[in-house]
Image (cartoon, rainbow, N blue to C red; front, side, top):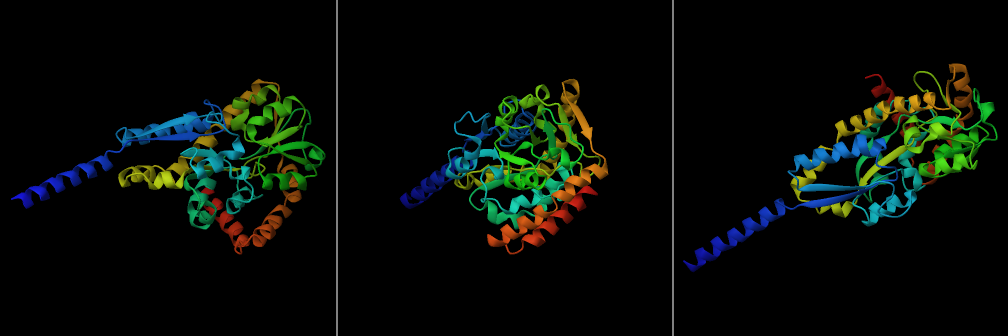
Length: 345
């Protein structure tokens, strides 16, 4: 009888422990470098976190820290999530050059065609190929924005000859290579620093999407914003990363992991693309309502930029090969094909 009692007691304890594990509640911190009204927070992170909180019955909660309010600078975000300072961060792989060489393929000229949804789905299709870049963190989303436009404080631009000698902000080394190919001078800096750099004349302009015009108040500083027409209207794009600390993810109960997994799949990639496509028009309208003019280059004018930057891809392949990425050339072709496939959907 005593033996049966012990067995029952043991079973009860095991059941309670199992229930406790399943009922575990977690609070996850999210840090990013833009303000609380930027699209990344109000249009993507807030709805996403609210959905997960609801599906988890409140067992997962999030605390979002915009504008680096947990501390540090934007280039430190990757190390913060890798080392567990923050549970989740949103950052640019380009802020830590050399750590994410494979993701750069989507920033190369002629790969991104101006549709963030199409490029995001291409990235999703190629996550296995990108996996070596992401081994030290748990990726939740790898995505792009709608694409770079050229914004200048004074210089009117119609061909690549017009940007020669200008100092232009860029966030990534691939963007620097493109600017150099145009005969301009790249100036690397996180995007929050661009407003002051423009107002002080540190740079003549920058490569950013229209999405950040409102958060950075570029409509008060920019005289000209330049893009092309139709597909391939932008000057490349930037890759972004929503990443979670690997150990923190692994520590979650299986049912909470599944909720996160279910909310970071293909649909999330597509939705993030739609968010970035949709916010562009609001930024354009701010330019029109302010002091600026939006210049749409003719196909012939845009081609002067594309021809000048054609060698950037060869430069990237050569550097990637030297870093041990033997399939660099095939990655470029695969990325182009995947983007084109989803552009036609």
